[in-house]
Image (tube, rainbow, N blue to C red):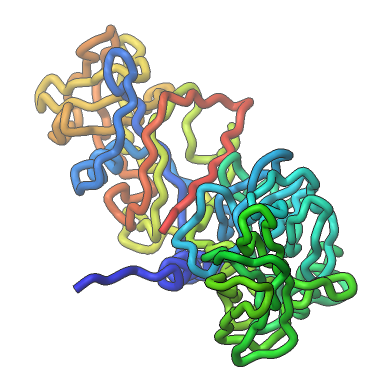
Length: 448
């Protein structure tokens, strides 16, 4: 039988992730790793969604850091002069090719309720960037109808806005300490009207209209009214616009169903449909619903001097790990953690070098060198090196370098159990070198 996963379920899954983080019921960490090259040309492979890929990621894991923040996000659509925008439409599956919402230069977010159309019904480009933060919809001189939803604060923009996504949220309770942005969004939410007819979309222009027919809206609500425009050259109904009402439009209220009929005008056959809000509470009550938010972004900064993170080394993988454990089996809750094994040497004949392969001359165990600190070597093992355990007291050589020494303690466990936790996301990338003077702004987006 044909079936679908609804947008409601996708939104709920994204909110569950967000709630787990914000309520502290789960711990989310970014993990970085893989110091060894992809290949001689550093060709970055596409991750494969299978257990082997996850195991490989865990084997090369260097360090983890707790995510500092989380936000629900939606695709970013910057307003652009001369672009046609689609109307908010309760029959649209997913996101239309031409966006139905925009972010302005002032980080204000608006939904497009009506596309500007000429008297022939042809969609026109948007030429006026909306700026009003009215509580209700408004029409600009280019014919577009916009509904202000919220403004992205400077703090949220810094943490959760990327080249492809913007944050969205519902404003909670406000008080005397609330910002102007928060107060305005709360006002918009509170002013949302249930059951408005947001727009009317012509589905059939009909024929033979010599004058403007009357548009009648019938349904469970009241107060909505609109006016048609005919194309005198073709005798068709070209467009229908919601009527003006002071500073807003006559959307009415209380409609759970709405039927559109045309009468008079000398013609016949015209048909149209009403567009109702996605939410029973009305447009603006919950921007997460209006903008179909089904993605969550996690954010943190990797500072050059972060404890447990290597410098003078690079990484090629970034992952998101939920509820990692420490090597004692308990839940790991520290801000940062090292995931690499370590050995100490009783003597160093020749210095060891990062990214070389070390080999125990008795055990024949091999590993990649991640970091060298005097007589300490941090290392990891993979399928390529095998997972044979090094032995205390054996001679250690570099197979592709000059390093040589004698092992004192072969296995000092990491703080973090690298095989623990739920690995939710893997990003393969070109090598990123880490130094004490730099920071990486990590944003991970999970889309449902």
